[in-house]
Image (tube, rainbow, N blue to C red):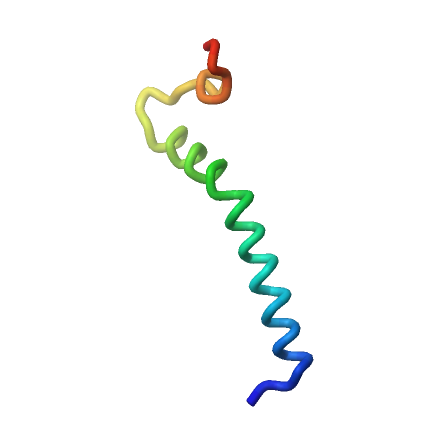
Length: 51
């Protein structure tokens, strides 16, 4: 159905998307939490365990 080159491109694209989702999931959730909450928390309070 697909040529080998197309299959390879799909596999590489899938791997890149997996990596982006894996690395970006937690920062994305923190960003959503910061922008949607009221009052907005300071970034240092989210990151630092001592704040």
